Length: 229
Image 1 (cartoon, rainbow, N blue to C red):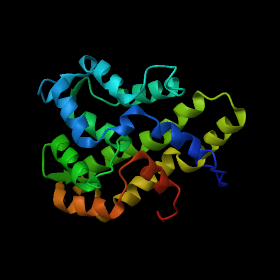
Image 2: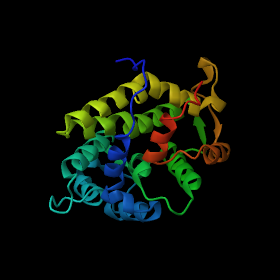
Image 3: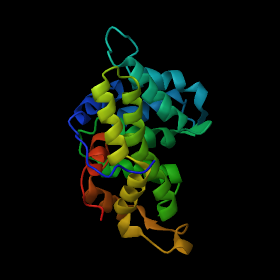
Image 4: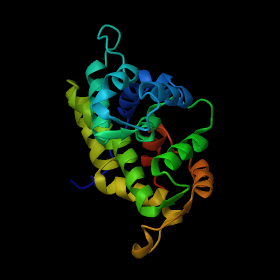
C-alpha cells in the first residue's frame, strides 16, 4: 500500500506511545538486561529461542490482567518481536531488537548500541547492506508493526481509523525505506560496494550520537519530521 497523499491528525499517536512506555521491559536498563540474558542463556552465545521464550516474556510485559490493562497488546508486541529472532538466537540478536524498548536514562545510548552491533556482526566493521537491513527491521517494528498491533486491539472506531491513517501516511513501507536511506545517507555507496565492510564502528558510533535515534519513541519522532528530502 502506498503512502497517503494528505497528512493526517496525529493526536492519537500519544495513545500508542503510552502503551509502549507501559511495557515492563521499559523499566529495565541495558546492562541489567544483558546480564539477565547472559544468566538465562547459561553463558552460551547461542540458544534455541523456544528455550528462552518464557524468560523473555516474563521480563517483557506484566502478565497479570488485573495489573495490566494493555495485556493483549503487549503480548502481541512480544510475539511480533520474538518472530524476528532466528530459531537459534544469539544474545546480541535479542539485545538488538529489545534495545529500542529499554529505559536508557544513563545517556550512553551510542556506546551501548555500537556494542550490540559489534557483537551482533562479530566485527568492528560493518557493510552498508548489513546496516540497512538491521535499521530497516528496527524502524519497521518500532513504527508500522507496533501501530498495527495497537490498532487491531482497539474497539474505539475513531481511534482505530486514525491509527490506520497514521500508519498509511507516516509509517508505510515506502516511507520506512526513505527514512532508512536518509538515516544512513552518509554511508551511501555504489551498488557494487554495498557488501564491503568499510564502515568502522567508532565512526558509526559518533554518527549515531549525532542522530540520537535509539528508542521506539525517538524513531517515531524521526518519522514525524520532514528532514528526509
